Length: 587
Image (cartoon, rainbow, N blue to C red; front, side, top):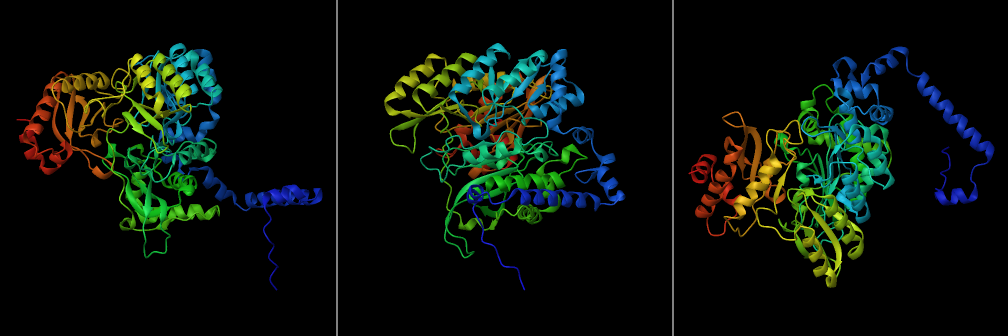
């Protein structure tokens, strides 16, 4: 005879009825304790010894030094070491520097004194009052400036070693953190910056990115991954957040009538394996999911990566290499197994992309200027920054504008600029006037709107060129000579890590040694993402940094003289073979 099935009782009803007596509670507690002891005792001494000799299945003797450090001390257990360094006024070096990066603090000496701090702003969202506070902190604790990054967050520099805890405590006081922004962490989670007010978006996903960020920081196992990890949430709207350059991208899609038994509607398509520094984009997995399931699916993906990521060779320790070794079908099966193991009912749904409605056209300059929102009578205003640079006063005043005229909401973009949304039509002129009064602008040329740069040599040990200064000079040079009818994005990166993603720029520049041994660049052309996805091809170099404006002027001039009608730079470069392109653009 089978046992009668009990009817499920809602949690709130259990609480209200005091469902368990004290004796029942004691019995349950003792039973759970006995079960745990049984599980522990069930392992033989040999089995336990084998477990003790491995870290996530990798023998300790095979671990690289960084993995050994994480085996010896979980990232959450190193706070006392930060405190001790702060007391001694001593900057972290070696393995300590590596471990401290998980808390967002980087030793960048000698290029820049003290620590660099990289923030964590999930879904690239910050309140105006928080931005004001960061302006004060930049002025009073850090070096008096901030930089927006290509993951839609802030970096601060020149934080002295004896002010480390002061900095971290101040962030905490205002609901901010830099935890999990460096080394082997799931980095700042990006989202479409106009999520929630983009007139053509399919769904607002940004709150799922915020939920995922909280889940990661509060889960012990999700600290100290095999290597860094990037998530992105694309709302299917008009502004790109370059999801296909991330390890994981959730891209909103409208599913049409199909023969797979899936109800038409709004879902997220799952793409995996993007890492353009290693010349790979995230690829479609053939599955979709419900938007509300994306945080659970993200954790399952991280757990598969924890178990199967390479902990012996850091050059092969990204998700891309798990996919390369095992394939996409195998990886999707492991993700579903992880979801099933916790019994949350979340399912990955197989569906071919042919059943997806077309993505809305992307406005490549939609992050700059004044644009209507989906809410009637409101505008969002995109502010131009000089390759991501902001002063403390600008931070405070932008925060003030968001508080006074908007809804205390500020969005940061992967294009290194700031958006203030929810501005009533009647207040737009006043806001623009105040933006201009602080030395910023709501307009940009077709060169400036898409110019992004990593920190470069003055602040990074790895960089081979002074990227920010060189990009600023290059943009000024080109916009003084050409007026384009469509944007040309320039991505300038200092080293092979490609923080500024030179492989997806119309023009991509990577720092290199010039022929005379000085600072130089290699020029790439024809890169793009989203519907324009493709890796830029090497065109010329290395050349001396001082010659960069001259060479780029030649390239743009020859393109304009040789293109068909109003052909875009991207279409022009992709229409020609590399040898022909070099002959045309470099003549």
